[in-house]
Picture 1 (cartoon, rainbow, N blue to C red):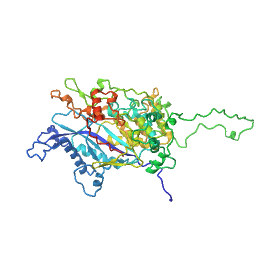
Picture 2 (tube, rainbow, N blue to C red):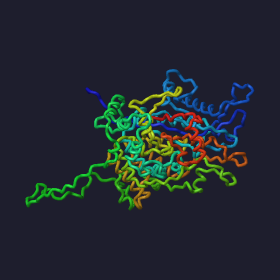
Picture 3 (tube, rainbow, N blue to C red):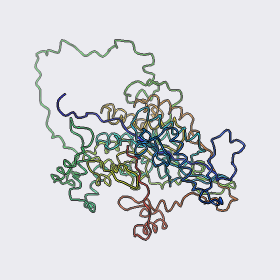
Picture 4 (cartoon, rainbow, N blue to C red):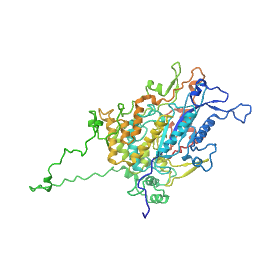
Length: 627
């Protein structure tokens, strides 16, 4: 066909996963702590002596050695691994993919993990980042192979500080278009209590995965609209170092697509600069204006009906006793069996799934962070005498949200029609990564710095995409269950894909069902997350989630908890990190960190030293996940 062809649909949804866990090891010369059962469990990792010291006075650096053994195991399984010293077949697919960080598995440290060290064992913290892949069956097979290799060759465990994160996006370099991003954000706001039921109860209240429906941590929860975030920036003036037309750049890169135009953003720097040169609109005036034009009060026309008959009179009244040409299935009305469901909004289509267990309410769990009986089994550790031995994971401070209903949040998110940066600003937390759905890649802080073409920057021998083009799901608890890992990753991909492809009527129908189940009296338990997944077309994953909900809290505890030995000196403080230092280094893009929010004088003093240049803080490895 002659002429330039422009893709009318976006590509497959892309994704990547991050798995956090611990690996147990001992030093050479130490006995196996589980000698009686060693043949029934995974092999023990034994850190050898350093060959540079013939007298065997020192061992190799344990953390680096253990992580290198994981890399070697994955390479032996045929997977691409970035940064390994192990040699691969030159020119092979495995070797070529291992050269790029975005197309290979990556084994790194994670400073957020904490654990009381078990007696006779040493442990190392591990984070496995998968390649950025498209939503295809082979991608999930690669993840299954990696998890199976690790769990069969190393003694691994997870605890409440471990997380399982999924990044979803629109490919390696393309950004999510504004219409899809609006639908996606509004869907996550409405379905948050439903989705939260699939995860451990502590994840919605702990700092690194807290929910905006539980804590007022973002602008939607603070009852702010789409114009408030931009007005605040415009009133401050343009950011330092940016031209006066910086908002024109943000508007251009985050604009809605025109009919017949490609769904991906333009990769044309000249076109973007030309639009910026023509930018003269007073954005503050636009944002402060009425959201829509009111129709004038025009009286309806008066029609004089004469005695003459109309041509349509011969047809009579419309027929209301319509019968289908084929008999209805016997269970057609079964999904509306209860009295409450008879008054429920209609579902997009009858469910093909026969429910095996009762539904789980779709409302948010009770906020239990002040309840010691809740914290004790989930977050806190106690010694044999019942004394508090310190937390492994602290709950986030309680900040009650100002917005509690569903539809007003959906309304404000869908009204963000100027630029996709409005969505990012409304959904993000002021402290990066302290939220269950991270939209920071679409906030003003990132969109002010990116270009039309995806830049590449170099750090050592790592090349990665400098644009944060993904949305990160952070609420899932740490796990090494390969079936749940792949099921949850598929759900995350489908949430974005459905938001992009669904018809507006069906989209609002599902949103209405979510609001009805959470707010209508008597509707609690009539529509749950399993029904929601079925309406998204995830029938197989809905069955997995139904079984998961039926098992209860047992699915959240893959490992027994370690408790410190009170007889060992300093056991209560025998943690792997200085947590105050980590928190002090978590500074927002605008320069505001935890100290400004009143999180203690120690943190405030440390932040002041860092910002004043008195203390040099090494740069943390960037989050390179941008599938």
